[in-house]
Image 1 (cartoon, rainbow, N blue to C red):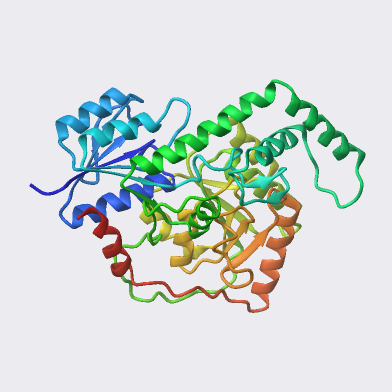
Image 2: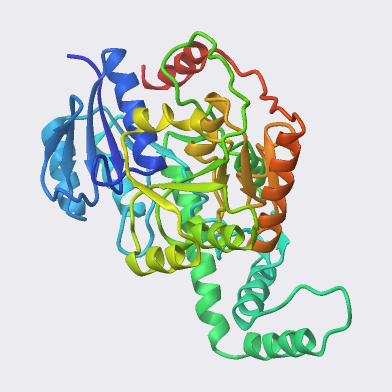
Amino acid sequence: MGIKILLVTGNYLPGRSGGIENYTHWLAGILQQHHFEVEIAALKLVERKDYVYEGIKVNYLNNSLSVLESLIKDGDFDICHFHEYSEYGGIEIPWFAMAKEYCKKVYFTFHLPYLTCYKGDFRYMGIRDCNNFSSMARCVECVFATKLGYKDTSRFDIYNTGIKMLTRLIKKSGRIKLVQTKFQSKKNALEELIKTCDTIFIYGAWFKRILNENGYHSPTLREIPHITKMTSEVSKVNDWSLKKKILFVGRIEEVKGLHLLCNAMALIPEAAIALDVFGNIVDESYYKSCKENFNFNYRGAVPRVELLNKYREYDFLILPSAFTEMYSLALREAFDEGLPVIVSAAKGNKDVVDEGMNGFIFEYDNYKDLANVIVKAYKLKEEGWKPVFKTTNLPEQDIEEIISYYR
């Protein structure tokens, strides 16, 4: 009997089609091709039952640790690989500890920067890029100042002075203890996660660097290639013609920033630019609000292969993330398909986009700047601008590196 692997996620295809689900499914397929026995275990499923998806068995956990424990024991899995960490009632440290009891190895992939920045955005005071998540005093000040509405300004500002004074008062009150407790809980969980797992995979180079800067140097932490293709492909003919179409791919919820894109499009006088939106509607009222701001074409959630075949019908992929991305699957696939991008200056975006080369960057959470960048990008394209993409390893080489961890 071959090596048995259980991949654990929060959701799964086809009911939920996001970056984590598609990446996990890609990995499951690769492992199957290399003769590993692979199953999926999902915390929640739209289908609310076990099923088989494209040859891979998907087990419904119904948000239950005991169901996962029974599955691991009965299935006699050698490796349990978690692809999600969901605090406060989801997949937490006890799940990893249980898997460690029964499996030879326990793995984890950081698809999001779990257990690090308290607010999850790596924005100090909500206004500046920040790499520090290990200083409790700094983080507590940032949390309260952000909640109170601290504003970026280069001049003396009575409002900001008041915010700082109020923050100091709050820090002397009992409310600070709650934030300090949560801060310490995250720190403890991160240390326990690193100690429990045999290997932790990171495909965002920026995140590995920040972990190191904050004192985490465990050999458990391994940077791996971020790959989405199975094999090398014959070079496609690039079509740099002007199509007057832009593309948004992602869940329809606020953190993905569709509202920023719609607000930006409403400012652009060139009405001939069409916006197509692909993704699951997670927040119906949010979807309606965005639609009212700009009448985009909603294309639904389509299978990954079908979506990739459409990429070359567009001038740009827009990724207006209002939170920290690890390294968006949509972004990685856009590069593979020769589609330039326009992204927010969130970590995980700005770290892989070379301004004016493979795309353009706009100011974090600033729809007016996004509008300006879209206009600039189209002007450059009309003048003959063409994107340049970095050469990467052959997919076969990267796949071999990833597979080596499971042997």
